[in-house]
Length: 197
Image (tube, rainbow, N blue to C red; front, side, top):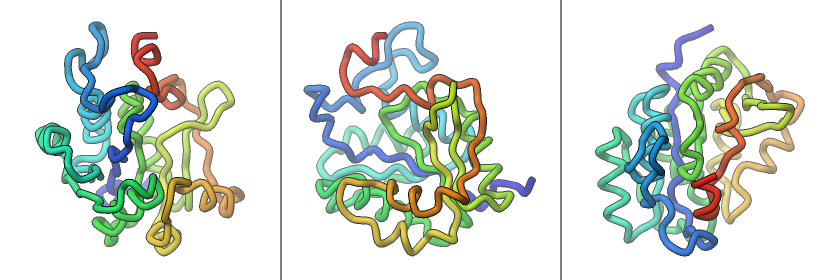
């Protein structure tokens, strides 16, 4: 496999946390977690940075505490002025900031239990020529998703809240599915109960 030096990690951290009741990305990780006490987004950023140094974290305007925490966790922070439009707009903003990359591994800031070795596996498949790569745990496709420069223009054209779903559907036949033993690929945190379970 080719080295992953030209693959950039992207951490999507621009959501509104509407179901959590507060900014969930700043909520501390529970005792017993690998990053216990650290904000959820920082735990996610550390996992991403462990696999792909200097990832890009895209945030919404007006959350300086989150920006600062993500910088301290090793991220290049990009403020997306139109983040309220949704995940697609935020992803396009991040890809624009790293448009010279060979590919991107897109992780979500509300998935702090994702293991770095899973992220590395996705990055290696993209570096080795896969158009799209994603992990599979117990038969279910999870995160992060890796995408190559071949879909750069499609990523840059994203708007709204759909994220990359249509791109993944359009290129489903080119998607490399990677079996992993990592329940963190499927565990996103939408409520406080999700974090504590």
